[in-house]
Length: 197
Image 1 (spheres, rainbow, N blue to C red):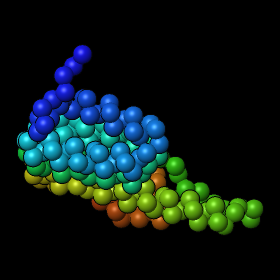
Image 2 (cartoon, rainbow, N blue to C red):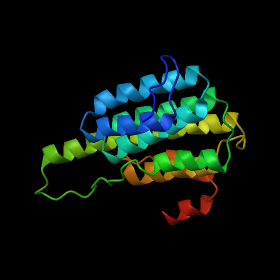
Image 3 (cartoon, rainbow, N blue to C red):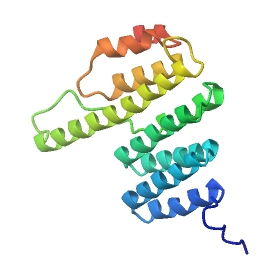
């Protein structure tokens, strides 16, 4: 039987991850969100950045899997903020963590060719949801680009993150802005991909 840690002593992050996952799985995304944020703040103030990152990555991924986009995006933004606070270098491992979160943002292309039977209300809801997804994902990836510039990526930011942002904007934006898409593809590590669009 494990002893309860003394007051003020933080348990390993994995204990909190499991506890908060249960709250999310029980359907209380908002309550879980508050728990993720308060626990993260405690790990960061104790300068236990690695555990704070584990907690935030787990939370962002779980919320996004549960289609809680704004909650997941908020934790994703806190993840990047913690990368900065912890002065975590841009490398394959940290980039991989950003990619794992990015890959869980929903990809639901918006129908641009409408038939006469399409429900206007349904379309309006789909467009609104798409805008929120794009804003949330873009905000996360732009923050990740700023972090990458500061902590070891090339001067214009991580080419891989530029490609993630370009692809998401291209596939998910209800109002496609090819200038923005092109801007990120050109700074990415595969500018030829732009020609295939």
